[in-house]
Length: 177
Ligand SMILES: Cc1cc2nc3c(=O)[nH]c(=O)nc-3n(C[C@H](O)[C@H](O)[C@H](O)COP(=O)(O)O)c2cc1C
Image (cartoon, rainbow, N blue to C red):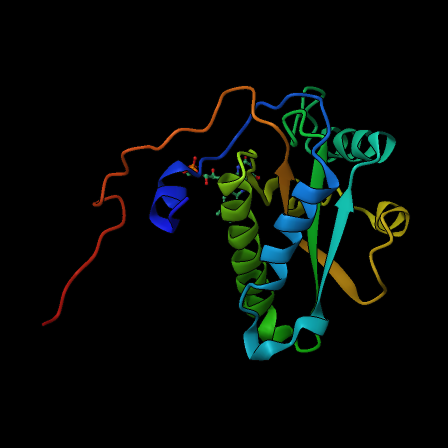
């Protein structure tokens, strides 16, 4: 798929089949993560956690329900794979780099996922709500001094991804020529 076609096809997928993706598909998406730009090339300050364990996915959903006071919380929309991006922030003044890095990594993964027909959606809400508490952080094997910053779902979408018409005026733009 050409990149512009992939960009037009990417969409936040919020409905998944329960079938797990293959390791080959996962590897392609993780390759895209490793190909993403990261501030100052400090890849050692970023960590990915691939969660495919049903019990742990369920624990995160339960924790989201608790912290958001919403028993119906469904942060992963039934996706069988969730990838968490964690960052090590050595200087609190540079926290913005952590979010920028996560954004670049997740968008790269999302486009790679789209290219091979997988659904994905950027996830920030459940992390910002504090669903990954210290005990879950341990269970997820997130290294010491790293904190979850963003996440992404992966799975087969219940509806096939199709190219979309994207309005080109969604983001206000001014020109100085
Ligand atoms: C930084 C960021 C955080 C987001 N957090 C969530 C989230 O927690 N849950 C969710 O369902 N979608 C989340 N989204 C997806 C956006 O709602 C979605 O990208 C936007 O509405 C545009 O729709 P599209 O991705 O289908 O083009 C997030 C997207 C970004 C970039």
